[in-house]
Image (cartoon, rainbow, N blue to C red; front, side, top):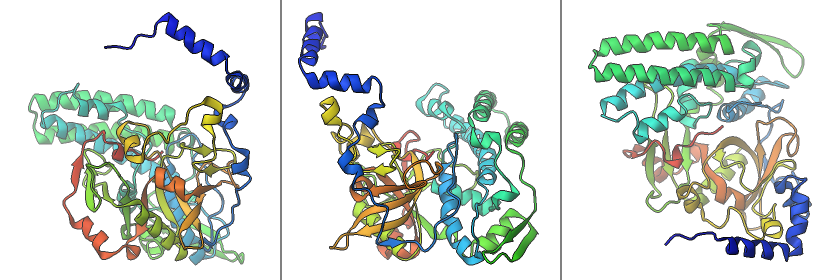
Amino acid sequence: MACVLSSETLESFKKAFDNDQKNLLAQNVCSTRDPLEVCLLRKSTEKIQHVYTHKVECEGKPVTDQKSSGRCWIFACLNVIRLPFVKHYELEEFEFSQAHLFFWDKIERCNYFLNNVVEITKRGEPVDGRLMSFLLHDPTCDGGQWDMLVNLITKHGVMPKKCFPESYSCESSGRMNKILKSKMREYARDLWAMVEKKCSEEDIKKQISNMMEEVYRVVGICLGIPSKTFLWEYYKKDKTYNSVGPITSLKFYEEYVKPHFNVEDKVCLVNDERPENSFGQLYTVDCLGNVVGGRLTIYNNQPMELLLQLAAESIKNNEAVWFGCDVGARFAGKPGVQDLNVHDFKLVFGVDINLGLNKAERLLYGDSLMTHAMVFTAVSFNEEGKPIKWRVENSWGEERGEKGYLMMTSEWFREYVYEIVIDKKFVSEDVMEVFKKEPVLLPAWDPMGALAY
């Protein structure tokens, strides 16, 4: 039987609300203030200290800022890579070009989408079916995953930011994305019709090529087009002049970057605690990727305590860690704190938020998923040798936390971190063996297929 909200029931709600003076006070305050800021606990912020027992030897300068774009996965990756690079080449400040990888991801992602449309149409998937509808909802988003970065870097390399700087549509990608999404949906219609008419493979490939020429034009106009070769001139810390090039971005990666950070030596471990997805199993997600012919996006599912242990071990060995989390949960933006106890929602609203569900339930009921990628650069341990807090390099500029660096507790890590990328030298043989298994295919809309923005 349905529960109807009668006028008598609603009147009783109002009477109970008005009879509690705390509700009226909370209402007055929240009417003129951000409710999240109102719930911020003063006593929690008093405990914030950006001091750690173990910290990577150097941190990157300057603090990066992805602006109004969903490129955190690219920023976090290049922020990790630049640490050993800066150390080796004795640089004061340095950034790799985020725009360079962004350009190639847009090109490759659109081509990947168009090929997916053909493939799933051949499967017999209807246009208004769940899979096609899911893919058409956001066919060329900014977000990504670690294996997508490996695809881009091993195919297109990397380059210094000075050699391919930001553009308006890099920093504010919404307008460009709207154009691309509209074209992708139009192209999807045309390709679906060609498959239905049983056009030849050669004709379909030619049509995709024609479509991609138009995509390349749009993206090139908005972002610029990376040069085939570039010359990088720089000063070392001692002010001596140096130069590299002319050189291609791929050769630059292979000769100058890869010896210090090889993306293919890193593995992605995830923590999915839903009972149906067992630990010690490999997973992939249908239609999730960015480069046709590239590597699959794969996840090695492991217990949370192992992720904590390996992330800490990596930092103790002077290697920063790329990770993905649900950044907005229990997050105090201005002080830059990710802590389960930083807010007291019950004090203000009379109900608690987020923690009424466990981690598996939050995935199942759509209350949480991986939304953002950042970098661990430091960790502190308690007397028992367990990690208790983490220093996090973000890509939102210097306004939050300690000049752009956040502080995360291990309790928060357990609840809202979903994946880490770690060098395989830190991973035991039995965990590495999981990568040899046939991956379980999750549907395209599974929350583990969420992309970092």
